[in-house]
Length: 285
Image (cartoon, rainbow, N blue to C red; front, side):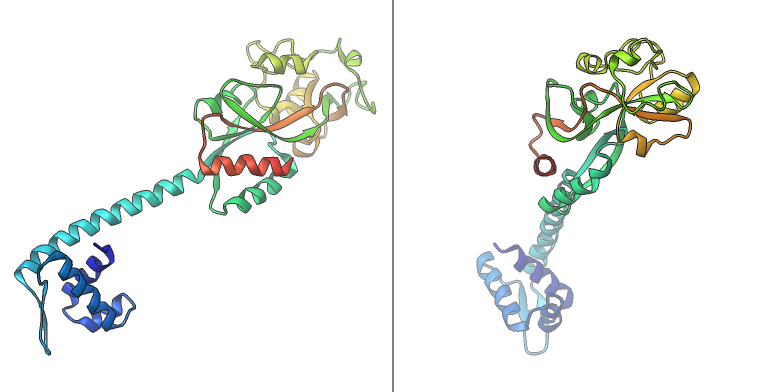
């Protein structure tokens, strides 16, 4: 049975006029009438009495039209639920650590929308401790994180690489250096910065001491102000000098492993929108 014919029949029951009912569905009366006739044949009963002057529902037609209304309400509800579910699947919660993808964010969104223009993002802030767990625990669908190696349950797509820098007070003897090595700053007081993953601690050496101490800094955006307040130094990525500028600190290039930024998603998440984000990130890289 064609559900469209049921809609036509319900409209005809409301209008009791073939021309007006057909007009509501933007078709001419002749094909509209054929749909009604076909429906009556399929149901094995006459729904409408027709004369040259009037259209009226038969008793059987009144019963079946009432059932058709219930059926159409159910179908419309299912369609709306599916529409909302589809829209929800295309709205991804994006967890962002610090400055995220820096200047490459617009490139990524353009690539994502090239796969599907209906994908949208809501924002959640990540910190140095929960950046991986937020994705694994379903708090966010996608994470822009610092990559230092495999993490159980996650898939990483490399997005960009940038040099690391050491954030020093403007009054520091290192402030005017063109470049520093780990040996240069190994004896300096480091700002305690949280590093929840062992590989992050290895990457941060010699700044890893104090990463598990109470009050260790979790938010990358707060590092420059904390450096000014404490007089200590801290690690960051090169983009921090543009995204978190502060007149009382300097961002000095530091030898050592660069900062790798990656898109993290759950290994078991095979939704269309997630696949689009993964493909877009590969394109970005």
